[in-house]
Length: 127
Length: 493
Image (tube, rainbow over all chains, first blue to last red; front, side, top):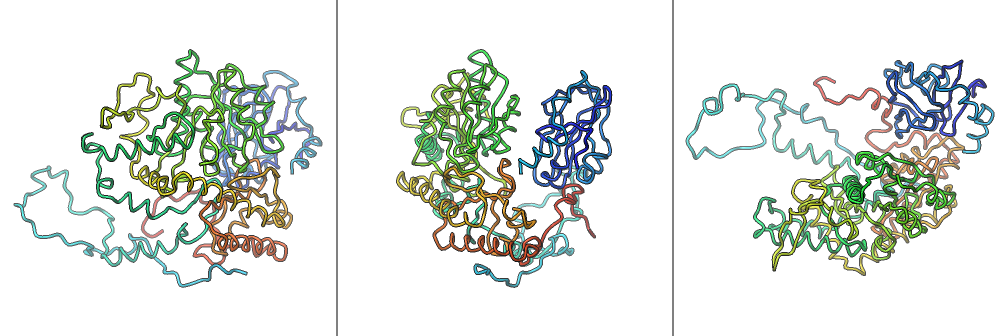
């Protein structure tokens, strides 16, 4: 369910680190809890984001939720396709439903976050 | 078994636009008794038109039937219990309407001179003093036009005082159980919002608060009782922590229906509080307005209240605009006067002991529901509750039935749904607030309905998942409505 090469936050975001680039999204558990997502608000390319701080929000039929960044860096790309097809976040949260790509401020930032196994335990416990 | 309602014929009704045909009229004007003029000459030909494109034309009886038929599709507190948690959907006593219709009140105009407005001003002054007495605070402004508006005014008052002390500060703390309007109000007033998690009992975590409050914190916004219906028993200590570090305590008065006549926020250290007159003081919830969200403050904050303020000048009431520290106006004139009249009527009709009884009954009713439904629904927080009770759908979720499904099935039983999926700290919340309005018969009827649905979930979950069946429109496509909204009717669609 949860890819082994991702790291996870308690707020249910994931980050995939490749070199000095990171890709950020929300977890399958998060999309399940939110229900049908209808709108995604993302930062602009070039915007700085900070670990633990809000950088955007997702709106579902139930609620609007903040998205917290797992890492610090600068946004290099946003997932444009979500504007027309926010449902991608429900159907493929760990793949085509990625939110933003960032250039990491420093390497190794994602290490303290949860592994896939830890996250699986965490969401198991939360339920 | 569904006892409270049965199906009956319900009239279909198209839009007025679809009923229209040219030349139909619902009015007749008397013959002109002044000389006729040519509007094209008087106003300029460019400002005159013969027809309004697409304007519906129908007869009087068609207009009457249209709106009467629509009214039968409704559910209202005058039909039965309206258990929406956090909304305090209490009965709006008819005496409120009677008083609001008194000619001098109904026809009062804000541009009347003060000398002709003394009665209306007296009504407002009395309401201010009654609300100050109920909240245990020093002064009240009736200007804000809704709860969230009161919140924003309250936070602006805090900002004004802190600015006067030399530093407006940066942050407002808000518990994770708060109403969504709280962070919005703080943000609009220019503050960053920091969430503070609740402890296992669903209450403010004092140790966390002690740790977080510093010189950057302007205020804590807290709802008491909180959105779980649980009294924040550490509120006095929370106020002490905040005040010792120069921060203020804002209380959201959304749940004052659990406190009126029993406990006064001013006594537990609250600096600013807003009230929702449409909740606690029985004014109509309306279709989004007009509303009133008076804000009550301590003596220290009083100089900053919005202008104008009522002031006694000899034997008369006057408007005082000359208040240099005021945050200024937050609303035209002095708020929604008609709503204020109704709230005062409610307060005076009950009197002190009556208001206290209403509070006690509201708490009793919620606890009666809690005790009766506890065998059937999961209670995530065991703390004693006050005027509302929050269950979760944990047991029903095992059969694939969620809180929204149970709420929709409740419609088939003849009740308005409870509040679904709020507060957010409860997974799959069912939030129920009966208010003092309901007697035992209606409460038992609601409990029977909820119990029966719990059994349906066990026997035939699909039945509940596809509900409601007895209404004009069953499930609507909420997702398509949000993703691809159609905001305007056009002929032929």
